[in-house]
Image (cartoon, rainbow, N blue to C red; front, side, top):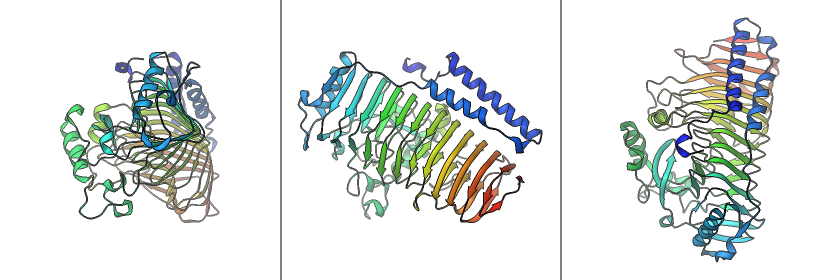
Length: 488
C-alpha cells in the first residue's frame, strides 16, 4: 500500500464486513436498551467481531536470509559505536529483498536504528542494544510528541513509510535513559532535574499552544537540540505490517512503543520495564488493526494508552484509532492498565481487552478513559472481559472527561463516550472507588454495563455524574449486589 493511501484502510471486503457488523451490533445493543431488556444483554456477538479483527491481522514474513551485524564490523563490547554496522546490514538486507538482520550475543552501542521494508531486526538471547547518550547522534525526523507532530530527535528505532518490518528475539533494547540522561528534561526533581537546569516546558508551550493552534506546517515545527523534547523508543510511522515480538525494553526516554498512523501491527510477548517520566508501554495512535498480546508492562505511566492526536493536531489529521485487541497481558506499575486518551481528538473505536491481569499498589486504575472539552474526541465500543485485578490505587473503571494536567483544559469540543462494557471482572482491592465516572450533563456518557463484576475493598462503591445510565448485571461491590440499573 502506498503511503498516500494510508488513511484508506477499509477498502477490502473483509474490513468492510467488520465495519458493517460493528454497526449492526450497535443497533442491536441500542434496541435492547430502548426496549428495557438490559438484564438479558449478551455480548457474544461483539466478541465474534474481535475474532474477525484478529483473523484479519497477519504477521509479516521474511526471506530465509541472515545478515549478521558482525559481518559489517560490529563489536559487542558496550563501548564501540556500531551505527554504521547496523545501517549497512539493514541496507544490504533490504537491497537483496529482505531477511533477518542478526544481533548476536553482546552489548552493541549505537545511534538510532532506522528500519527498511522487509527487514526483521533479530536480537539473540544475550544481545543488548545500547542507545547512545550523546544527543548529537540523533538526527531530526518527522515524529510526534504527546499527540502533536513535529520535527524532533529520531526515535531510537524508527521506520517511516515502510512495510513488512519486525523487531524480534530474546534480547534487550536499552535506551540508557535515567536521572542523568533524557529524564531530567521533564522538569521534575524526582527524575534528576535540578533548579536552573533546562526543561521542556517552554518548548511544549510553543509546540502545542502556538504552532498547533495556528496550523503551522509540520515541516516548520523544527525542534531538537536546545528544545528538550525527548524521543520515543520504537516508532513505526505510517507503516504497514509491523511485528514486535519477544524483546525486553528498558530505560526508555519517553513512550516505549508508539505505532503512529500504522496499520496491521502485532506486539507479542514484549516485556517493558521502565519507570521514567511519560514511560508509557504501548501507545497506538491514529492506528488500525492492532493486536497486543502476551506482554508484561511495568511502567512509569500508562501501560497501554490508545490515542488519536491532541486538540487541533488531532482534528487536522482526523484519523481515529480503531480495532485494537489486547489479550493475555500483565500490568504491574502504571497510571492505568488499559487507557484511552487523553490525546484523543480524532476518536477511538472498537477496543477489546480480555484475559489480562493487573496488580500493583502503584497501578492507579485498571480501565481508564480521559479527555476534556479542549481535546474533545470520542470513545466508542470498549469491551472488557475476564479481567483479574489484584490491587489498584484509585478505581477499577475510571472515566474522566474533565482531565487536565497542563493548566486550563477547557474548550468547545465536548467529548463523547458510549458503549463501555465490563464482563467477568474480579478485583480484590478496588482502591478509592470501585467505579469513578465524571462526565458532562450537557453530553452525558451513554451505555455503561457491568456484568458479573466483583469488586472488593473499595473505599466507596462508586461516584458518578454526567452519565445517563449504568446497567449492573450480577455485580457486587464490597459484597453488596448493585441495583440492576442506576440513572444519574
